[in-house]
Image (tube, rainbow, N blue to C red):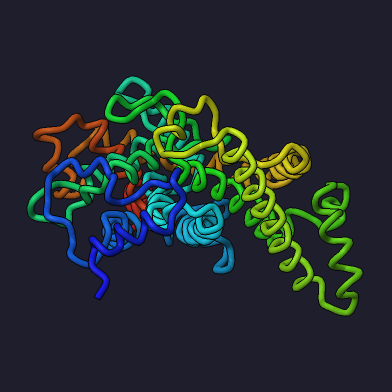
Length: 384
């Protein structure tokens, strides 16, 4: 029989010395007896999966709004893809896969409806009322807003998973300092792995969705060195395979190339700098999990291409600007007339600032719920 103590013992026997062990956790904000047959991080993973915020990711925008089609990625499918990539990297580096998976599943819980345009709108509206960013809101979700347990608010996750949420960092996500967590030095290797897995996932899967939508053409991609290297080999090897399957295979190959480079380069850095413990990781002045120089150079034009050709495409920009206005109109009408809020949110006004109550309410909405609320509030023919 494998108990929690047995799992903890296995971790010390099988994981690398620089991996975070569940027995070494800094614990939870509210003391509770740990599970007999699950490690602290396995328990965190389950709490995240069963949360309301996790289920709502199914109807939150990645790039394309939910009603634009069933085949595009949502925040939920993106999250699952990040977890898959991150676990592969973690296993190869002998890191704590349970911790990596929990962080990956939680990293986008603070996202608003309508992707980054929804976040940008709330950030602007909340400038004078405490601010807003999805990392900080994600921590607020798991610490306060989720209501599942009788003994404490939130999910009472471990320090290490919560650190992964607040210190999540990519070119699109810049973490704010938080006094409850270390802000100097580097986060754990498990946090670093999820951050890079997130980049790999959205670069390649946004490329996939962009081609599927017709907003990105194969011909324009031909000038990208990394794409050209991959696709020319696939085209030569599978000349009779249909273009759709060749493109799918190219995306998989791109991901594999980047993951392989990341693992090999990170392992070299760990050996070079003789990293022997999680404490040494935190003291290291830069992130250890990173691509090699050649891959970093190859990735840059492809990422710039996505910004220019997909994220700046007029159709995507139109939807983003429309979403920005949707969120702004909802926020302003609720804050101007708070009695329009549903009873559960209105009750919070007795003890919390109205701007934060409204912000929490909107940030928790799915795309389709936000659109329904908009129609109820502004369409004179819609039933309220």
